[in-house]
Amino acid sequence: MDFYHTRAARLLIVAGICLLGFCLWLFLYFQHATLTAYSNNWLEPYTSSPASSSRSGLVLYTGPITNIFFHSLVVYPWKAASDPINADLIRNNMVTVAQFKVILQELYNDQYILYDPRLLYSVDSGGRLHPADVYVPEGKKPLILSLDDLNYYTWMKNDGFADKLVLKDGTVKTEVVLPDGSVADTVDGDVVPIVDSFVAAHPDFSFNGVRGVIGVTGFEGILGYRTQLAGATGDYERQRAALVVAALKKEGWLFASHSYSHGPDFLNGSISTSSLAADIALWKAQVEPLVGSTNMFIGPFGQLFSPNDPRRTQLLNAGFNVLYGVGIDGYRKYFPTCLVMDRIDVDGYRLTHNESFLQTRLGI
Ligand SMILES: [Zn+2]
Image 1: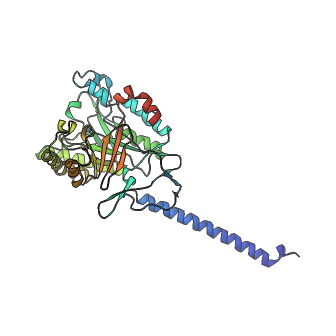
Image 2: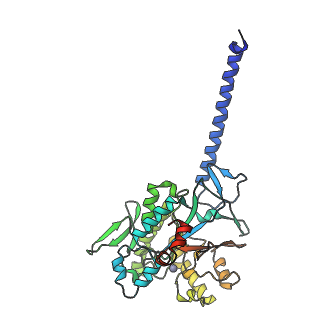
Image 3: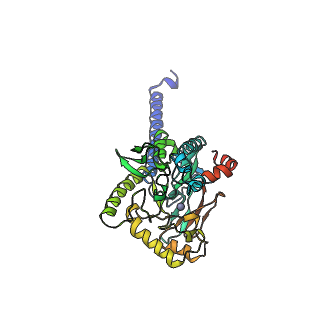
């Protein structure tokens, strides 16, 4: 009898198989543990950078971070076109529901994945902001989505937009006045429910469930609710808005300040330090209690002031250390205490004037 047929050899082979099995179990256990810790931690920005270039099936991403924003979508373009005052503004600054659905599908086809902007940095105990490594599922490209002016201003009434976001059956929908004058809750009256439905159908379009950043002003309330009003009417509006905000956060939406007033003095940069202080105070008093504290500021008209401008310092002192501007050059700069990023406006103007740019840069 040769060695391979002895009892000792058989025991050795069985022991070897057991050892291999144990090693495999150890590997899977730690891989799962890492993934679980990562998934549970997505609400907080990273505070450390991993040493390895991959983790839990994710890969280090070193390409451009794509940052885009939309205004509210036009549900009925013929209504918008019939507004003699605002038709051009809408045509230039908005896209239609039909256009947005095509854009979303093309972004998904082009391997973009909605990404949490809080994963781009860490903040140390001294308030200094540090770049963080970006990890994505292999083959995916991070996409930061933001929405400006999700307020459903009064001027938009009768212009073919939704009227407000509403919470129905546990999900956020759009309240839309139909052409026959009746009111309906729909799932495709603006970006929020369309993206929510799209992510439900394509979970791999969102990294850890995040959706995007909702920028709101305060002078006419938020999300279609006139929360700026005093008294019982305002109380009612605030209660309803708070319910929608809670549901949006649960769905993975984040909130940013888009200033309180969105005044023209932001556009030409003439806003005084005292006016800016008053604007910030109104935001803190009326909007922050509804949407919660946020460190993100979306400059009205893209206005963020220059780095050494005292008004930039005012924003930083108010707790806004992630600042969003407007621009198609992919500008993203880490200052010692803040991160500044430009966003591409995907709107009627770009679709008309920069079609080839959108095609090559975004694949849409
Ligand atoms: Zn705006």
